Length: 284
Image 1: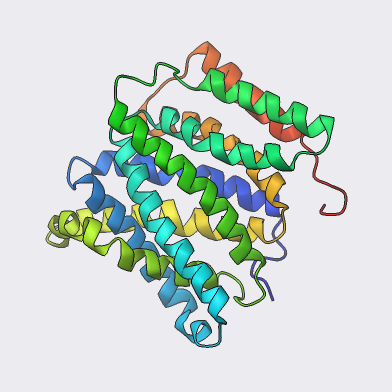
Image 2 (image 1 turned 45 degrees about the vertical axis):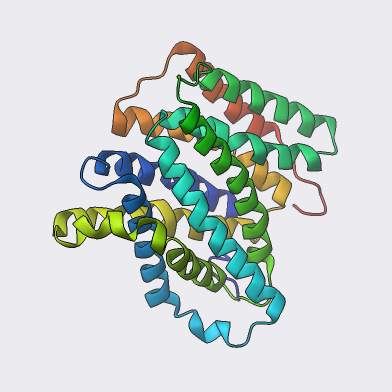
């Protein structure tokens, strides 16, 4: 039986959209105490620990077939590299800029699957909204742009592989996510554990890092799995266009980044694009 079957999938996505950038906004504030890759590892490791204690996924691992094991190991490796690139990007670029870049390959997935004029129009609205929402100057930070672009491609892979895991009959509920996050914590160990060591001697920083992991990974990734298990991939990919709008709101509330008039217009266009999209009747 799938976990969260009674929760509407769109509600799951809204929760994910809020926490997808709420946690990273707090992480930006933590960068003053712990190096970037150290925060990234604390995020992954704390999320993996929470889900491991909750789900005890090693019991599921023993009965998986080889193809599913490869899928979970691949998704876990992708999660580790994606999180590292994302944090290296938001250390150099505004959160809203990274969000908009992250959105572009994902919306391409929706464009590929769009088969009606209504869906094409919805995509155009969403893309226009993101264009207005983004500070197109992209600041003079080529390294940050490179990390943001890498994160964007990896995030598209996260949607594809995450959707496969969510629809897999081999892994019940969110056990696949728990196994993949354990893999991600191991893969990211040589990348960030050294930078995370100062947090071990500071309980407040360690608790803050765990809070970032729960708000950045546990809540949104679990909600993503619940939404992906019941939403067509094209529908989910288009709804991801809400994330730049969410990043703008979080930027105002947490980082005091007040949007301009064009950015507000962009938020409204993104919401209009999501609202006007329609999934195929066979998948509704």
